[in-house]
Length: 509
Image 1 (cartoon, rainbow, N blue to C red):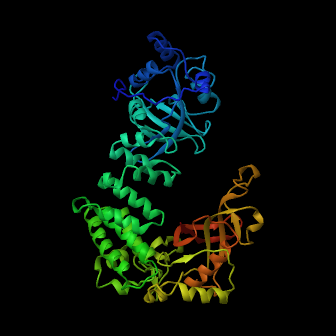
Image 2 (tube, rainbow, N blue to C red):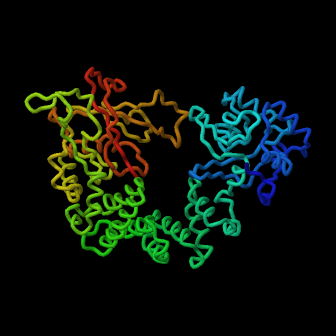
Image 3 (cartoon, one colour):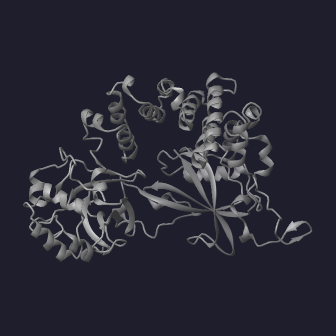
């Protein structure tokens, strides 16, 4: 159990006129607490009672909650127990209102509201502990079908993990945080002002930054096109603190500087040397997700070099990328299937994802230009085949006469949809537009020109022209296709009792 007896409340509350009018109640007594518990049907946690005796509800300055999983919630205020205040447990907009009127699940007590204006709320969750136990703190998302996210194991920990938002925190307040808290603060906040985040670290003085803070600032530089400065920061970190992330991030920076350069270039070689070590370290630590990140530096940043160039010099990179990404099993396997004349006769619905090419090795940028077949072929051959492994061409056919594809985009009007497209949303309402556009998922029906299979080039050509008249935001980089199953119907696009495969088009920023 985490209490708040020694908690420093300095700067925690925002005592505005609005806060006094709607949140802050009169001083509480033990009798007030007992009466509230009797009416609510729950014993209030000790830490919450300590908060009430410090401040009977209120609007908070420390409004950004970040848990250990970097889940971030921005709250407005914490409810007190003065029923005369609109935003209190027993007030007009209190527990009874949210459960009976708004239909939040009756699993505990509404303890705080958020900046969403009621579309998500913070609850004390008594499901596991019962009405007399120590409740957990959760977020319930009304817009997400009342989905539940665990925030903290108890109310005390919830309060202790509230931070100033990056827009509000001062340099002095930031310096008072521990290094671990600083990293958590910078990594966890949604839509963070990167310029201000870098400013907070730089204002501490580069020479005063610990290895973990140097690495954090270097990562920010990497993500904002300042690779050379990032390398300078990474080189300040001594050998004892160079874990897998150091090699990954430093390799990433060199890869940015070497993007588009030949295999022999200084930055390409340095990136490969660092990533080779980084991959070894991630493998030893069994960090599968991080291993993928290391490989992506080579696949997507150093896209102009071919695997055969680094196969001998960097065997760990070569083998790892081959195993993770380059399984080209586009031809149906006959293993475990009935055969006739050496050909598989199994049901097409038994196809698995690995039986189709992923095309994730192909580097292509979707733009607003609509190509003719000839124009696209010229562009494709100039810009794609430079770095796609030549040996993969023959095995890269998508062996299907027709497919369904889905992708995400923004549209101003349904007139932007082609005859072979349909939005998967049930209804598009004008009031749901943001900045004059709907964010939608679109399904399209594609038929191979030869009636038998798609070449890699043909598929990419058709995908490109589908997307050219729509807004993709910054997700314009083609990162492959993902098999999602078979469908007999697709929003009126097909009616095929035998079903056809569906692929999601992966686009990255």
